[in-house]
Length: 413
Image (cartoon, rainbow, N blue to C red; front, side, top):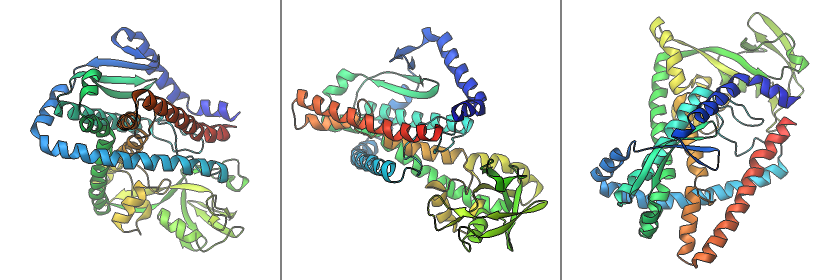
C-alpha cells in the first residue's frame, strides 16, 4: 500500500521523467547509447574554451592538478570509511537515515532527503558541467585530445560528459593521468567552497533585508490522533508560555520538557494539548513530531516582493536567527535539514560534495576507480592489477547497493 501511495503522491514527477525518456527515445538517432540507459549527445561544445582556459593558466592548473590528486585519495579513504560506518549503522542503528541515496530530484525517498525537482535538476546540471569541464581543461593542459563533449541522459537524469582520446590518455605520464581523473571531483570540492562564500554573503544580506515572523507546519504524522484538526501550513505560535517566532525558539522551548510531558501548543486560531514523544535520535529528548518552516517578511514592501526569489536562490536562514551567522551557514550546509529551508545554491553545494565524493569510490570506471587501477599498475602486473581492481569494484558496488536499497525497502514495506 505504501508503494502505491508513493506513486500516487509523485504522479506529476513520474510523468515529467516519463516525458523526458520518451523525448529521448523519439530522438534516439541523435544519441549514442551505452548500456541501453545512458544516452550521449556528442558535440564539440566547450572544447574550445577548455583549451583557452588551459593555455591561460598553465602553472596554476598544473599545481591544482597535483593538489587534486592528494585531495582525491583523501576523499577516497573518507568514502571507504563512510561505507564502513554505513554498514555499522545499518546493523546497529537501523532507524537512522541512510548515508547514501540516489539523486532523484522531485522524489522524497523513505528515510532520505527530498531534492526539489527544478532546483535539483538545475543544481545537478551545474555540478556535472563543472565536473566534466575540469576533466577537459586538464586534458587540454597535457595535450590529451578530447574526441567529443556534450550532454547525456542517465535514464531520465541529465548529465554531461567529456570524452578524451583513451589511447593517448593511457600513453600519458602517470601524473598527467592522475590529474585528469582527479580533476572532476576536485573541481566539485572547489565549487562547494565557492558556494559557502556565496552563502555567507547571502546570509548577511538576508539578515539585513528580512526578518522572521513565525513558523508554519510543513510536515507531521497525519495518522497520529494528536494532530486531529491540524493542517499543514498552519502557524505554530506558542508552546505553553513560550512564544515561537523561529525554529530555534521551538527547539529551545521543547528543551525544558521530557518525553511524556503534556504541553499546550498554540496555533493561529486555536490551542491543542500534546503529549510529547521521545526524539528518534535520542529517546531522552522531548519531541513534538513536526517539521516547521520559518515564515519571513521583508522590511519594506519592495523587499517583501523580492523575498520569494531571494529565498529560492539562497534559502531561508531565518529558522535559526539566534545562531551566529557563520555558524548558522555551516549548520545549514552540514545538516540543518528541517530547520532552515534550502535554495538553489544550497543544493549545488550538497550535490557537488556528494557527487564529487561518490566519484572517488574505487569502483569500476568512475574517477576513483580509474585512479585506483592506475595506482595498482605502478606496483603489479596488468593482469594482477585488473584482477584486484575488479574484485574491489564488485565488493564495493554490492555494499553501496545494500546501503542504498535496504533502507529504501524498509521504508516502503
